[in-house]
Amino acid sequence: MPQASNPSDSNLISKAQRFFKHALGKDNEEKWQEQYAKGDWAWLRRLDELGHHSILAGYFTYLKRGGSLLDMGCGEGLLQERFTEADYSKYVGVDFSEPIKLAIHKQTDKTRFVVGDMNTYVPDELFDAIVFNESIYYLDEPLKAFQRYATHLKPDGIFLVSMFVKDKHLDIWQKIESGFPPLDAVTITNARATSWVCKALARPEK
Ligand SMILES: C[S@@+](CC[C@H](N)C(=O)[O-])C[C@H]1O[C@@H](n2cnc3c(N)ncnc32)[C@H](O)[C@@H]1O
Image 1 (cartoon, rainbow, N blue to C red):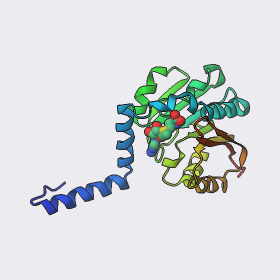
Image 2 (image 1 turned 135 degrees about the vertical axis):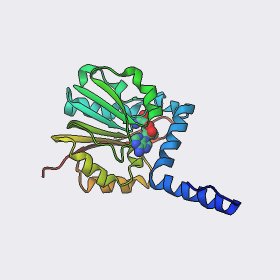
Image 3 (image 1 turned 90 degrees about the vertical axis):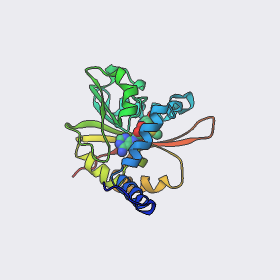
């Protein structure tokens, strides 16, 4: 990067740096890294957040018990804690390095935590279920990403998704449901009046 000789050049350079970081999604990554390092997301472990993890875990054990699951944007692996290792053949959680640091102590032969960016991550095997638990908002293009991830689902594989209720999230549901029909949907509300919609979605036949 060139050195600025005067203040307006330096302004331009930092604007350009911000533009390229944004274009590469690096500003998003930095924000998550900083926030997880400071413990800003520790509240996700609270009792009143349990509902959406439990519904997604329930869908998995009902529909795919003993199968494999890929948890995209897994954070510190709170969903994984809703299972015993007998419930799955393999669990892979993917996130940036700071959240993964908080999960790595749970790693075993069957339970893996991997550093990756879900907008570019390429799984190296097929899964029975792919999960976006409060993380789908951070996909650049949700429908395109689902189409790409669907190629890493087994033929009868499913997506499991949780999103908290907000008007603007209806658009994301509509987009993904245009390609992936829901098998079931549940809306839950906790004591603080926060609501989530959780859905199991099918991979359509080709
Ligand atoms: C609201 S938190 C949810 C974490 C976890 N799924 C849970 O429910 O406890 C969103 C997560 O998505 C992750 N995330 C955001 N953008 C991502 C990306 N591009 N690639 C991988 N993870 C991402 C964040 O680091 C964070 O862990």
